[in-house]
Image (tube, rainbow, N blue to C red; front, top):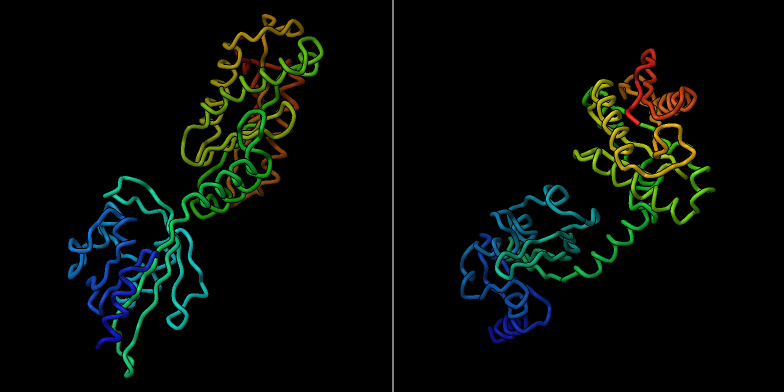
Length: 323
């Protein structure tokens, strides 16, 4: 009994945030480090199942709860990160963003939890320990963000575009929804750079990028810098007619910037050309759709620029934007 009391006191004073549930899922130990992490005192949760609200703003199971309830098959769906090699013998390991309602902060916690059994195999308790990994997670996410962003415009880069399009393509095959791609090119950009200089050229690209970012506002939409002065928009679940409306809006918004361009025949302001392609991911490949959008863009450039051309219908001379 003395050994058991010593073990309990030791656990209460561990510098690692730790709590212990009994077989019924009630808290039997909530150590001081756990109090400091969550802002919740031990006397508020010991003997209850209210510990869950220390980590989330709604009642949902902790890792220890899932183990105590025999629901470990749900861990992967409930946690942002999960070690699939986890098991009862070596413990379960997961990671998650927790809102921490009492201390009013959001923390990314690494969580280790494992069951303790009696000599005859009955579940006695579950021990959960927590590590605050917020700084490391934020640094990792920032590196991932930088790796997926074009440094000049802040838009998604080509790598992020490829990943996003592949993901939306798979989703489109399952939902049978059309997907539209807009390929956009800044008109006479070489002449612009030659006349106004590369620094002004960079400013010009950032201005166009801001217009495009506003046009891709829905969840699933993506705008990326495809290369040089060329941009691409992915619009999932968008028909050809809807994509044409977006393209026309972009055309007008860029012209409305009134960026001076002495070599432009369109009121001597900067303009863009846009190629539109729409397809069913279950019918054609994403490479074919990109090629069709690129071909439409080529035809827009040769149709006088400052216009929208759709790949999957006859182009009409009137599809020009106001200059």
